[in-house]
Amino acid sequence: MKKVLVLGYKGFIGSGLYEFFESRGPVVGWGREENIFNLDPEKLQELEVDLVVNCAVETDRSTPYFIPGSRTDEINVQGARYLAKILKGSNIGWIQISTKDVFGPVYRVGDVTDRETGYYPKFLVDDVRPYEPQTNYAKSKLMSEFIAESYSKSTVIRLSSCYIAHGHKRANWIVNMIRQISKGEVIHLSNGGKQFRDPLYVDDLGRLIESVRDNKRWGLKMNAGGGPDNVFSILEVALMIDPRVKYKKVPGDDYGFAFNNRLATEGNAWRPTVKLQEYMPELIRRIKSELERV
Image (tube, rainbow, N blue to C red):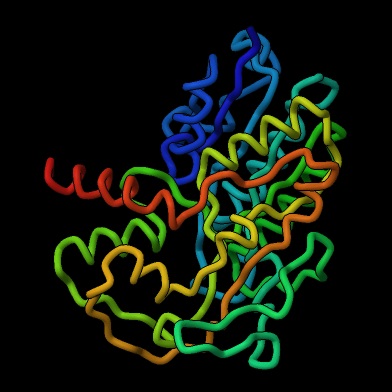
């Protein structure tokens, strides 16, 4: 049986995808210790890989400028370029994980409806929206998308707000809020938490990757969010965790972000199945259990 190779398998999304694919069959993890630049066509053949999922990433948002020679350039851009080189001429599929950040700050005040518990979008972000990257990270990820499209058996999947079912040192905002609220801490919410997100559970992302591979949906750049049933303000998510949550409002200008998943769901190939509101008790249980073991 062929194997899935997860690059960046110790990272936040990579670790969740590694667990997902491990539950389905053979999987190989490749992290910073192994170094993507130590891979070559012979090694891929030896590992019997039929799909590479590239989650390796540096997320430097500290500057609006792309910095050649930086760690961000090395991992996000040069790593993708090297991957394109070693995959050339093979039959191995390539999923390039990207980010909503390539679109920049989409929503303005006129694009949302203001309600007591949060902003709600008047539209969802489409796969072909014009790019407007604002940071070193976003620009490097956009470059990696262009590099990936040079390989005929590749597809880019952009994430907006993906979460996993365990803690991680680079955990996203949902896991971090569960940790803070479980400890009785006061959480700080910019815009009072009114900005919206569309959380996607990592197993649903894994199912999308399988759908792309099995249906040979190569040559696409698709957005993947939790879908309309999973669009919530950050305040609403905090209240899901604990209706008595203590929070402090801090200034902010983020109205939110959510994908329409048009290409991903085309032809009923895939739909998100996990609803955050239903899964939240189990997610809280898992994170609290980890906290108790620390």
